[in-house]
Length: 399
Image 1 (cartoon, rainbow, N blue to C red):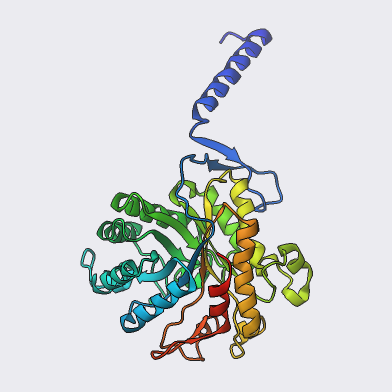
Image 2: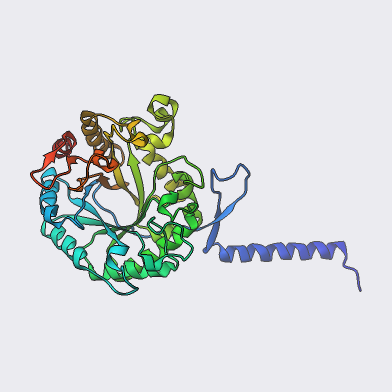
């Protein structure tokens, strides 16, 4: 076999390098390597899909919303929506549990309650955010340990088909959809270790289903629970978001969903201050302004044009439940902090803050043994409204 001279070998190597460079350039429009900070102390690069640049939907910044409970409570729904209007809020959020609509078998829908909710919200002149989650029993994996837990179906396309059916039925009448709730917690992911890449698969099929049913509807990614807890119980929200981007989530949500409970700190206190003060919790994620950390991650991944939707915000007054009582505030502080949170967003987060949703306009059947009772801005009742100071504070604040 003839030998190759050193000069020829060098020439072939140069040609090979040029070819590799050209091939790499041809693929540059498809994938671009971005470092994923915080996941590893080594300089390993993870290939992250290049961001999609387009005109993303936007709402007035901020847009004022409160979560309501109308599904099984149509007798008090009109009263509660009137209270929302009197408060000067223009949006409400309501869960449409998948298992309450497509409960028997695939393709068999019971629209009765959904029709009533949409009709009433429309009649009251409000905009509607619908939360889609809670899989029906027929859709669950055969090996699921607790069928009552919120969790993804065995076949993700079943959820995509459901998302399409809802959007198609209510085209132009539901303004926005939230795709799942807190998937970075095991208890919202069938008890399994949270998996951002799997959530992105679920988000993608739902996004595609909604957009083929109603092209104008806004799709919001799941509200992530602020937490520093590690697997198997949870995945820190910052890490989960980075892993969502790494898994290619960026084209499949119009707004980023976050949760922003205030814990002990007032809303004007920075995440740095909360982290440095053990009396305030000692963790960045315990600050209302942790939202700014999530915004920074969006910028890291070159996604600046989208708004953030705060899908849950509030302060609890719970004196009973140990998991909540340690960061409870009194009713006057709850009122002050909620109004100040909106004021902070108005003054510092425009234009990137979108929908801001307070929890809650209470379910009329809640009792004090439920932790949700203590977050609400009104006292649960089926009779004359009993409004807490927070309601009046939100009503009177500048908008």
